[in-house]
Image 1: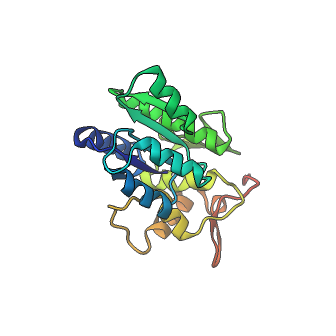
Image 2: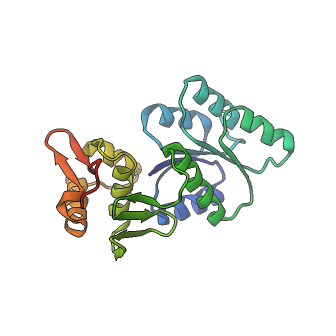
Length: 222
């Protein structure tokens, strides 16, 4: 999952960026509203973490502009503005959730998972597809009840494919989902992750449509 963090406070930004990266997310961090606009128009994010008091362009302006462009990206506001009027203004401008600073990173991670579930149309925290299950909160994957040891990148690839069984994702789409700007990506990195996943899960779980991309079959393998 790829997130955009918009935060001008260096200490908060570094803490959130490090915590979410360690949690398996690909996180791009920008520090002002104009750069946030440019990133939102050029990259396919899964969620936006947005401070309000930003240089060059206020966070509410960024949010209103995003919604005016009819983008349905989930938005979680992170701000020190704790007045009821500020929370109402943020939610009415199109935010999906609102978290007041200072906050606990575990709570932030839980709110992110809830918003991503909602976007995917799921209510249950556990992702299931036949005998395969993935728990994003605990970073646990099981097949027929047997735990599998996957790397963080492998879990990210599997999560992306499990969100839309039967529909392929190209190598470029997978790269955009699991890597941030600062990641040094080898040209065959996705193929390496796919090869490892097929070895651990069984080749039938991840199919390759030549010239199109990779998918988890709509009907789970038996």
